[in-house]
Length: 490
Image (tube, rainbow, N blue to C red; front, side, top):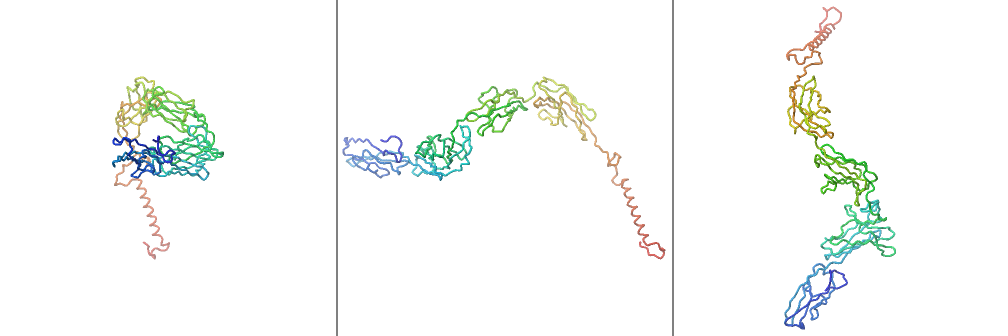
């Protein structure tokens, strides 16, 4: 007989009725009825001949699944029963008041017999000063803030409906209520308040259907009128887009005005015309003024539409940077070297060749060489650059006999280089330098190992001379008297 959901505390009691027909007692004069739960008759609905209808208040103990059995008894002692399964929601909630007098009230109808509670404590307002709010321009500061947490959480399937009220003094000057997650995500949950009395107002928030209990976070009361956000004040200036080596596209720009933290520099690149379905997009932060789009993403000779603009959640500002760039990954014109020759001129090699193909894209040539031959996929890294079709290269100074292999490849203005196998070679031979700069003989290492060099003889003579002088001193130290009367000291 009840319509809608059933929950504790509702004004209308639980009302149930049954229609009964007994073929042996069409008038039902001898029938009796009872309503029970788990074998216990409901109060006021005990067995009687008038209990075909049962009205009973919804008790807290009925919450969640509440099976009710309706039993019919006849005059012959027979009976039959039918079970009715009811869903009873707990109509509860919790309330908490901070030291500053902010009250958080949470009303919820949920599928559990346990009590629901919330906690609320004053938060540090300095954490919410000069904040940019999503969807609004300018900055705002909090006039009140509460760290909120539910005592229990329920999933969306266990919640019928829920709402939250935040009651504050009017002289606080709050104009909007925001919920801030622990991750720093801001959500406007009430943009205006309602009067409670002359000194108090309340911000009300009804949570969306099919939502879980609001998780722990901050409830922030902001002051000041919210100004609807507009596109960023800052815009792109001095924009340039150019092809770079290897098919890359390099973008440069400046910013006119001041970007906010919530603004981003959005880049969109399409192969072909703008508006493609598979565009490359990226967003850059404040202070970045250049971007390189990798050549691995481009095709040689294809053109790309590039847009750089400053955007926020509302839209993008103007002017913006727009350009078309043709990707350049190689030297055009089919240019290569022919009639390639290498000759020797003193301590240099002279290399010259003729260019074949269209040379309009050639800015210079690289002449590359190494010991040993090579193919186009394994070109040497030692190269000489020239603007013409000839070059003079200093020969190496290493001793030995080798064969050096050479090739010449065109280079375009971006530095893209063609590849080619070795086109010619030249033999190289240089003897080891055996000159001795210390003795002026230009000969080193020619003395026999068993002989004493001339320089060493001079040193030996000096030693012998010194030895004789010392010996003479010893023999004469006896004095000037007659030698015959003296003892010799040797």
